[in-house]
View 1 (cartoon, one colour):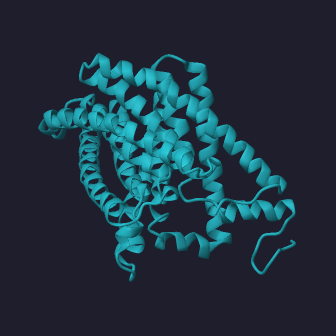
View 2: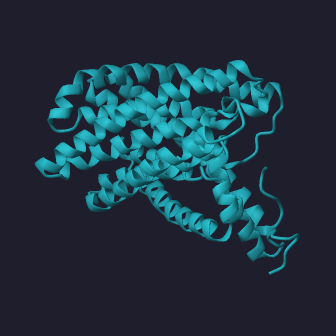
View 3: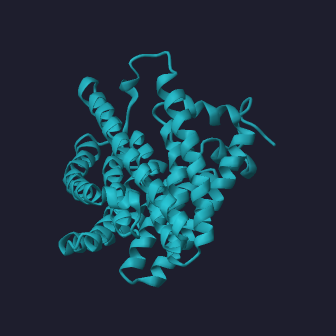
Length: 360
């Protein structure tokens, strides 16, 4: 294989493919998350054909990304493990947890509970492992200080991963026996509660970074939308827990979860205008080019999650206005998904043909 420099992939097609694998972002499972959650939303509002198309895209993307990440681990081990030490990128690995659970939840809607259970077990193990490894390697274990200067919106993906465990657990409970249902209720409430505390932690650290250090237009990028997405999945997890069959853990927390879910929905709604304004400030006022990068999926998923969370919360708490807002916003999320998907196809097609290089 031809190479352009020592260790660099070559200019022929196999070399370009290796270059794509080497540069694969750890947060690329957000593609799975965005496609899967919008598929769930379309299923809820009755657009079955379109929902199934996105479900297939979600499943194919998941399988492909798993293969590519394993390839990257084997062929580019140094680059793979270096990202665990990068506070700006390390938390992107949590998209694997969330993507796995989003796919599982979509499969549960088709009645494939065994597949959903297997994916939940895989995601739970990854969540526990990454939940201790990434904060240590990317934050606490670094000698450079202050690490908070490198905090960004990707830190909220830790929250999303935690809440995705709760959503998947709640999706499995109807098919579980009484004893297993009680354990799923415990897992759902525990992971939901952990996600609440993690949101407070990430929110404080990211806010400190924004207030204490210079925030250039180029820094205010797409992953900051995950702050809203983390709120929205907290709402969805709470709504799904409220729909679970009675269990001691559910009975003890039902009132708390209901009230907190409504509060998080309100905060997620409040966050949308500032995030839109930040995008205008970045791209229109300061002329930062709007080009495709994997982090754009960090906008698609929050929009889709906000829609689905509103639909479920409207049903669980008898809030029809919330449900109508979610159903209407779903079409905005679908339009953004289509734009980003086409941009991704064009970008990756150009990389494969050798007409463009990966973004820094």
